[in-house]
Length: 134
Image 1 (tube, rainbow, N blue to C red):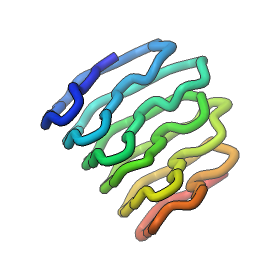
Image 2 (cartoon, rainbow, N blue to C red):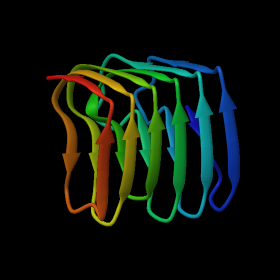
Image 3 (tube, rainbow, N blue to C red):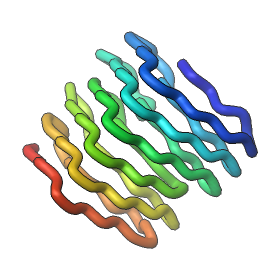
């Protein structure tokens, strides 16, 4: 897995994380992360593949996120996701926006999840130009 330190900034470009039972990328409170062109894959396990925690923000561009768990992306912070491919395998949510989170999703392909985009008390969730199939 790739861990970002609390209250830090990270840029991750063209990495591959496979078969990880934990969160593939964790972005803790007070951190900012940009992920471009990464491949994150997991066949089993409950944690989200990407976790954007409270008071953190993430920008995901053209990543491939595949697998199961509670969500491909779970957030309590802020998310901008542009042109990503999220492919579920026994996963509950493509994107799960939890309480007080904010999400802008543009041009993403989200397939194979029981629910493509879930809102559990988010401040705002905007979805535009998406290809979604559940």
